[in-house]
Length: 307
Image (cartoon, rainbow, N blue to C red; front, side, top):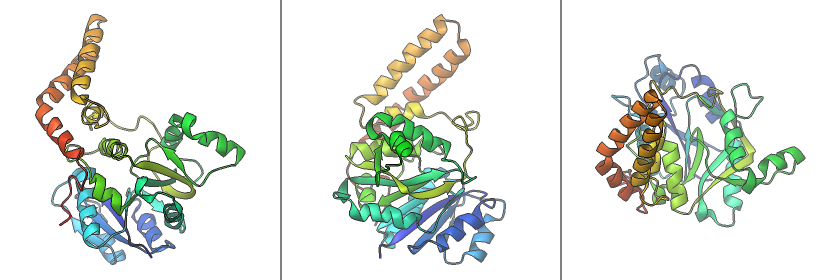
C-alpha cells in the first residue's frame, strides 16, 4: 500500500473542518495528514487537535501564506517516507474512492516518470456542478483533449493531459518533489500554483486530469474572485520567472512599457499609473527574480530542505 500523505494549510477553517477531515478518515486508501495552521483565530487549532488527534498539527507563529506553509508540510511528509503528496485546500473534501481512482491511473500509466501532477475532477460545494475553474481549464484545452466532446458523447478516457489545474487538489508523486521541488517563496497567496506548473512543464512532466475521480472544492464560483485590493496581481512576476520563456523578465518589462505608452496616449491614466507601479516593482525586483529563476531551473528539490 503506498504511503499517501495529505497536506492542508488552514486559516480560519471551521466552516469546512468537519467535512474536510472526516473525509480523510473515510478514504478507501489509508492516508496520513499534516496540517500547517497559518494563525487561525476561530478555534480551528483546538478543533483539529481534539477531534482529529491522528493528524500531525504544526502551528506557524505567523501567516506564511499558501506556498511556504505547504513547503513545510511537504518536508514533513518526505521525512516520513511519503510516496505521494496530496495538496488539498481547507475548503475541500474527498469521496471514499477519490484517492483510490487517482492512484489506479498512476499505477497503470505506461510512463510514471512523466507524471508531474494528477488531479481529480473538482466539483463545487453544491456537489451538482463542476467547479467553474475546472470548466475554464477544460475549455482552454479543447483542441488537444476534446474532453468536452467526450463528455457530451459519454466516451470519457481514463485521463486527459491538460495545461493547468489549480492546487486545490493535487496528487504529486515523490519523483515530482525530487525533480521539481516545492513552491517558490516569492509568492505569498495566488500565483504559486501557476509558477509551479510552469516548472512541471519545463521538467517535461505532465498534468493529468482523471474523470473517474471526483472531489469537492467549495470555492467561490466566480472567475474574478481574487480581490486585487487585498492581493497583488502577480501574473507579470509568474511570466518573468517562467523557465519556458527565454528572457522572461525582459519580455515582461518590454510589454509593460508598451502598455504604459498605449494607455498614456489614449488618456487611460489610471491604468497607466497601475502599469507604471508594476514596472517599477519588477525592475526593482529584477535581481531577486532572476536569482530565483536560476534556482528553479535546476533539477532537484528546489526551495525545500529534505535532509
